[in-house]
Picture (cartoon, rainbow, N blue to C red):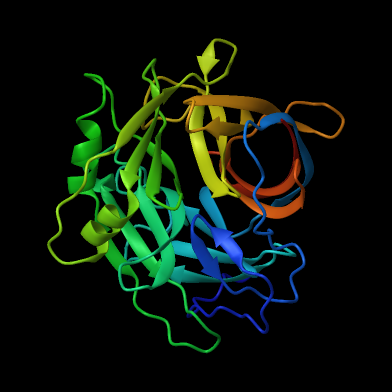
Length: 351
């Protein structure tokens, strides 16, 4: 199978339907894609009852998937050890291309080595200070070379010329977050999402460290990252969470998306006490976070026959809102050996 072509981004929107959400964003989407999430509000105090896998496909030529966002007809997938942002058809999940984020000579094996990779673990759709819609990709911050990110602009209309990918220095922002960590805890940002007013960055701590959510003022952080000379803001709030566990190992945040007033997250369990080293994967969860109460509720991800899913989910996006209590999700996974899959799952909520 030939490698994916490197492409210039285009929206591909042939017609307009009711606007799609991304936090407070309103973007046109393709009329030909009935699965595009609705803009309805899901409601408060929702709890996940079941998280059931409907299908799984292998994503060839896409190593180590670490996050996913759906914008219009396209699912964008970021990798933690590749220099590309990958594009899939959100309906069929067929690969359609990739966007180069940075130059490197370390990708000869198809994966950037652990010591030198930027470890892009989180992605969120945002609108910059100039009104430019795009994707914010963030390194984990678990090593100095991982204090970097990228802003990938998304065209506002079909045929509009793509703008260059913008490299971002996350060190000043991450210094603000590190100041709120307990002594000896390594910063390890593994998920991101946006509300109308905040960039939510989720800390996956290992070895007994806390699971944290940093709420950073959205306007201020985008002005800092994308504008000239603005200082890095500190978090307006830092929320600790108790996550479920398996076989004595606590889960850690791995993905997040904010839809219809609800923060949905994934969490996976690895038998490791190191923020850099991988461990045996024991399973994954899908959860709903109550930002007001600082609580989270989870359902273990399982196959339709009830067998627990034993893979590591790294990111999620809402593919369809079926009704006020049922969502169809697109999840991406990483097997820590360079392999990636896409799962379509249905989550039943109660509340």
